[in-house]
Image (tube, rainbow, N blue to C red; front, side, top):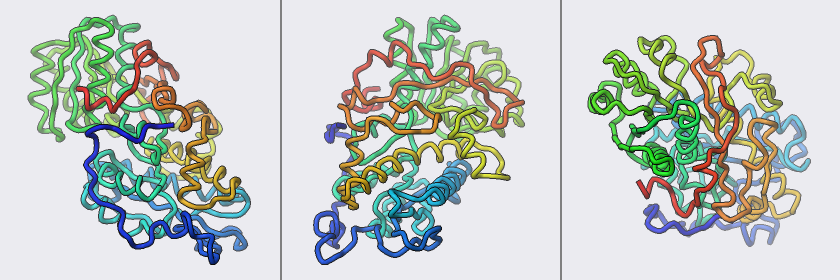
Length: 429
């Protein structure tokens, strides 16, 4: 199972308070008490009033933070996912799942995230969503102390080393490794530049690009850039001056459009491969659209909205009338491991936080209904053996619902295939 020890990784922000968080984990069955987040009473919007309720919390960027346009669809997709589960009989025929009562806005701020987590943690069995890497890092110590299983809305390689985190899809480090290997096969670059935001989103991908560049004997340069479309001057200058054959881009969508558009206008003719969050279909309406079509591809941990899988079909049917956005796709896919763990927990009879964590540690596969291969849901094996190493490459396509179509389906490049994960990649950049 995943290692619990990552030296020097997260500063533990808060210790578990002595307010009865473990009530029910070990002692809840005594005197008939329920575990935190589990009631014999039905959920507020129960399909079947004879079933009990499991409450899962959501901490997301719902109003003013930089990822709100993605986070709202993520959250709505997860509400639709669990509504579908409840209509199909719930968990083990005994419980339904509520992800609507304990939803909080984290504003993509670690301090706010910690605050709203503390407001709900005594009332939930686990977290259906904890959005963001730095925000989740602010509560990871407490999640571990209280055995609170959580589904992240982020792909940092740090989550590979945390038992309480049920991550879905390859991490940014693997994604960048595969992008470089794909480019070697497709474009034969001799030089690679990582242009990225600070922190474990940008640095995790940059580290993967560096590892793959070294394995392929490519010249590697690393350029950290701040967030903000008007702040990309240095990145643009570094690209146009050094003319790398390949740029691995790990920024926000507006930043990516500025960088690709302005370097192309200055005569740059190399290739860009941007990590998943660099794309937004609105970029097709931006002045950078021609440059993006010519020079940019998107790497991704999963298939886009239009994909023909049972999971994608179920998602589209559960979300009629929405404007398609791959935030919905990610949010829906992220819910499958939690469902698998809840099913195992209820089948095993230990309906507690520790029971849920124990169930997670037995999962070697998860049924993603085709959205991801089953082996993406391996939480039982040792970390490096369990890391899912397959990603995809998409191209810009203005005829596609979310602006991209897949040009290379799930694959693992030789760099990711041979790499041993012994700590978060970003720590090695």
